[in-house]
Image 1: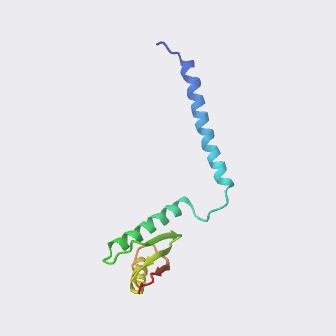
Image 2: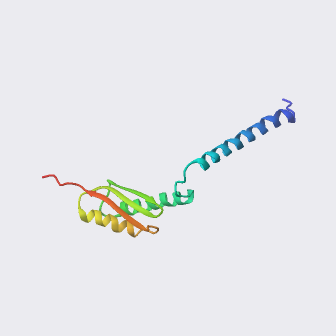
Length: 115
């Protein structure tokens, strides 16, 4: 198994070149897409913030299994369903107290009580 330098060099250069061009292609596509309004860091911050709000809701004595949490630039949107108005209000209060929340949009719907 006597391999010389030429036999190893060419495949290595091709592999690096292909990997580099694939990275450039991705960057070119990203530049051509419309601005989404958030940097990658802001998107990560928003995902973390939404997770922190969801964790705070899960830690509460009241349960919120049908409540969804989204975040965009520090604005947290609550949606979904709860059984009573006080539960909706409490979810909003809990979310407001989470560090990093700048505003709450409480779009939770109260379920209709069946007769």
